[in-house]
Amino acid sequence: MLTRTFLIKMTVLCLVISMCLIVSEVFVRIVIDDGMEYNLEMWKYARKLKRVAKHSDQGHQHIPDKSAFLMGVNVKINSQGYRNKEISITPSQGVTRIMMLGDSLTFGWGVPSGETVSSRLENLLNNSRKDKSFEVINTGIGNTNTEMQVASFLDKGVLFSPDIVVLNYFINDAEPIPRPTKNIFMKHSAAYVFISLRWGSFKRLFFGGEQWFQYYNDLYNNENEGWIRAKDAISKLSKYSHSKGIKLIIVNYPELHQLTPYPFDQVTIKLKNVADEHGVQFVDLLP
Image 1 (cartoon, rainbow, N blue to C red):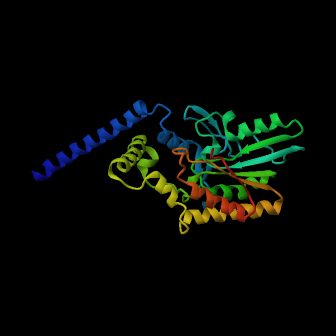
Image 2 (tube, one colour; image 1 turned 60 degrees about the vertical axis):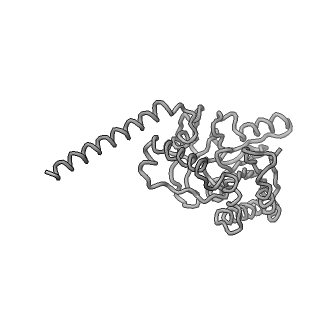
């Protein structure tokens, strides 16, 4: 009798839990998801436009010829896996080819393709220099670090014979390579993604924990593996560029939460020192 009662209670409990999960999933997908919720849009981006790369040091890559509507704009990946117009392997005669390496900032998260950094730079250069022509290729992939970007360039980007390579650097580029999650809920549940990430922010706000500025500064401890690997990647990129006569530029993008006083001056100095060590031009965009 106890066994039968227990089974009935467990069945009811499972049904209640299942209904709660279903309702929360429907609520998040229909009510919360307005197409501009950052974490949900990044989750869709990973599901719809990315795949695991063949080489582990590249982490993930875009799926060629895929498109999606993300963060309020249409995103189209070309046949070469870039958010860019189709590109010929051989540059046109007389055209200076610039290749942009980077993460979601370079990719152009939340802006139309014509408003990405690469598109704006190409228009600016061609409108200001009537004696020269420029082609700027956007190879940015969201949620990548410097190690992944350099590995992808040395594997595929080099085939396009750029004259100039710009490594667009952001402070989180010293993070470790993100690996595919084994969490089935994180893969398939919008509600789980939304609630788990919001819960993490809630805990940091009300229960302490490492703050964002401390987290970023800690990435640049000399013993941090991510920073060590980022420096090694810059060294590899520099050696290749010098050997092929390619001009390499490192452009440092500021973290915009707080510009004055800027809490990451020491990070900028460390990055500039790496650039100087390898004879690479360094551009800091901090106003």
